[in-house]
Length: 409
Figure (cartoon, rainbow, N blue to C red):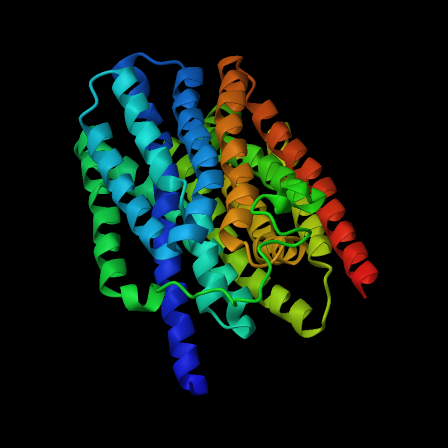
């Protein structure tokens, strides 16, 4: 293929995968965005609302670990189509819910749909995108997810305010079915790519599960778990926490969360170039980029929790937290790619990224208890704490990877 043809092919795959990933992240928040309506409608506590998200992410996390094996067996394209359809079905079920049990059923169905995206997405990116553009592919993948996170609260709250929370969920069901149609029309560009016949099943052994013996895989899992606990608190309760801490309006508090997500997308764009530069220089110090970015983000989150700044600074501070967290995104993915075994893409990413769902299942329930206790400042202090703990695991993953490379050399 010519260079122009390769560029077009890479761009198409990156765009399709990014569109799917943005849809999955949009669905992370279709319930959280409606908490102000669901709480009085069903007479629920914050802990009960947080449990809905916990159920979503528990199912998604367990399913994600299993989905990686299915991706390696039947191909990422089929699995991606299934997940997208399940998201649409879940929104239809949620829109007709008449009880807390029905809400829980819809959340569980959405978790099943969400479970397939990381193993399917990263398999497609690694198989169909050239190495020279892979860091940019990871960057766009992260940006699209953040756009989905940013769009969900605006869309859901606007429709709920104008019409009702049921109509917001019904309209949300249109998105995954529309994206599924686009993916199907472009299915030739997402076709599975066979593995080289001589490639081993996994590093460190020939068995299907041999990669599970590698400590680096579980350290990557721990990294995702810790960062996701922090993110779960931000997604579920940052807007409510800012309203209680600073006495700002719901619109400004929601706007602060949106600013967090949009700034995070901007940080990921910059982080993609940081990752490309590191690859071009032959460096494997992606963990150091992650550590610096998270350290700044944690300090800013702690400052928010102390409530020592005027309320009008809540939005720019949230944006800065998101920006520095976003810078770490592409370096995080490159760090994990360098640490993970080769030729078991679906399985590895399924296990590692299930840490994301595990953390997102714990975060809302944990911080829901904090909010019920009337301590919104502790919410942001907890967010900072889990980001700081994630730095420790990132440095551990990077150090182990460099040590393994030296031994192999």
